[in-house]
Amino acid sequence: MVNLMKINPAFHHFPEEMATVGRIIVSAAELEYHYCLMAGNAINMWLPVLKAMYRLRTTSGRIDASEILLTEPYRKVNLPSDLQEATDALRFCMSMRNTYAHCQWGADTREGLFFSDLEKAAEKRESFEYDWKHTDASLLTAQETYCEHTLTLLSWLKDQFLIRSSQLKDHRVPKPTAMPLPRMHNPKSQHVPPWLSTEYQSRHLERALKSEKSSRSLRRKRTPKKQSAKQKRMSALKKRGSSP
Image 1 (cartoon, helix red, strand yellow):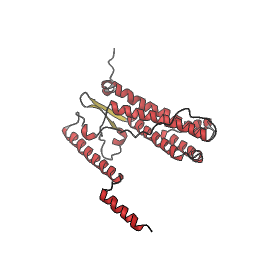
Image 2 (image 1 turned 30 degrees about the horizontal axis):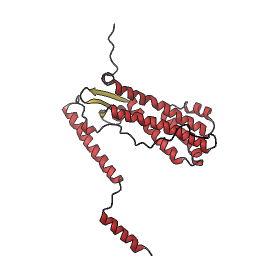
Image 3 (image 1 turned 135 degrees about the vertical axis):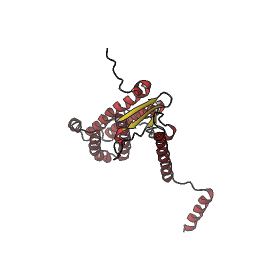
Image 4 (image 1 turned 90 degrees about the horizontal axis):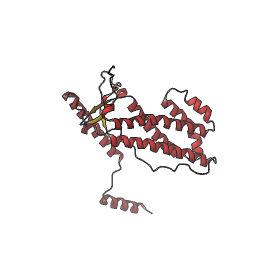
């Protein structure tokens, strides 16, 4: 009997984590189909819309086309912000799917599971350098839960549209509680692939620290500064002084 090679040792070292990755990848097709079906229902032409959508060759093309069909009908029943929320959630799930479907996996029994997006590696003109990111069971579970949240949100939104357009009496699915986006990976500075050479480990850590510092600065810029007690008093006095 011929001894066949394993597709990737990481799949066998971390079977539960990789099973979750597989569900995240496969769930994208379900989410996309649901969104396309919503578009068909929105213009009351679900059959020709599905036929047209699945003759398009890319997922992004199907989502973009469906969004165009959904926008005006959902605006008429005052659901544009809900549609935007659901569409953003869908696109995030698709980004997770695309990352995992086009990446290389690496594993270490002590350090855990790593992945590198090959499409990102190919963007560099003069090199093809793997940018390893770490994940684990808890993070992958959070990502899968977000996919489930997105499907529930899409289902609720479809019912809400049908109710407001007098095609349905009541919801079949309750609106899910808002959920923050999960991280795509764990902090890179805390997880350095042990199989890299000393030089590449140093480069990995240097890039990680630089990226994390930039992310913290960006978050600080987006977060409004809290006024001190003195500043609040001064603002109140200014408002009082400007009142007639």
